[in-house]
Length: 207
Image (cartoon, rainbow, N blue to C red; front, side, top):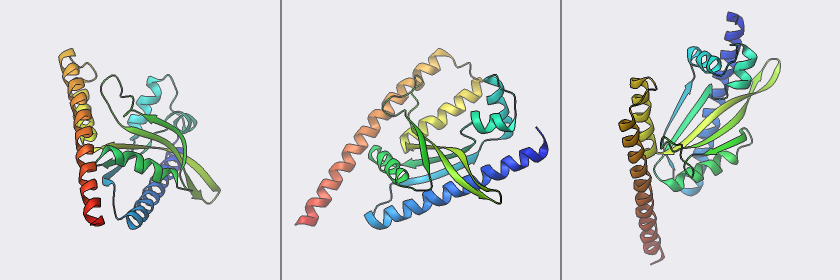
């Protein structure tokens, strides 16, 4: 791939990330203003590195070209939204779905159907518009939405996978899978506590 082509691609992805961050920020501010509640704990964003992109394409049998990057690697632009409670995940999905700037083309619910490893998160594969001199181009991005507990597990899982370079001992796998179940149970308990708190709050407001 020519350096010029890579620079042009990086420009589009950088612009797409800025567009996505700005749109999400505006939507969340609007939601908080109207509902007096912010469902988000924190947001992280990233652009996948060229080395990571290349490895992903090669592992799938594709040549590293601009066309293949745009068509086959749909998570170069990534945004992770971390919230407190399970109920907040759906709220955030609904908020994003209300956007005229973000086009959702696929959803992956790993909360209702966790991966075999125990990984849980809600993924939205989206397109965002990037306005350039030659016109508008739609750029792919991935949005991950998860609770604090899920994010904690995923962070540790990533470190373990990196440490063992994919060859994770069975004992470690079983331990992480058990932890994933414990975390799902914890999320449910925290949700019940939050719902009870809301009931008490509503009762006091009625009185």
